[in-house]
Length: 171
Image (cartoon, rainbow, N blue to C red; front, side, top):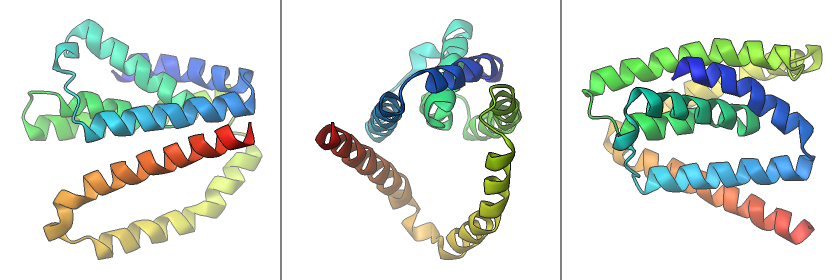
């Protein structure tokens, strides 16, 4: 999963740099809308839990990361359809995310997307991200846990659809 994702993320980044900004925006919004819908509908991908299926999902996650930074949604969709125990799924996700962050950063640097300007912007946003994580942690209520996933996915879907509508109206 992580290996094919690491390879495909470079191609996704090169593709997003090669296509027009409006096309890239359209692709990103469509990918987000499709993945959020699939997760909301609890699409079952258990037939893909083979070595070839895993490699294909990794490549899909890498391309989605390169195109729209949503490769984690592809992996979440894949892992949620696993029959493995929850602890194994959670550990696999953590390992995948750790590896993919390293590979994605390398790919961003190789393709020139992560330049000094992007690095400084990332550092400037780090305090806000850290604050947001702290506020989110403080506001988390276990009794509302069952609502978080559908709310966030519905919000993502709604925002993606809104973006698609805006693109349509602008075009």
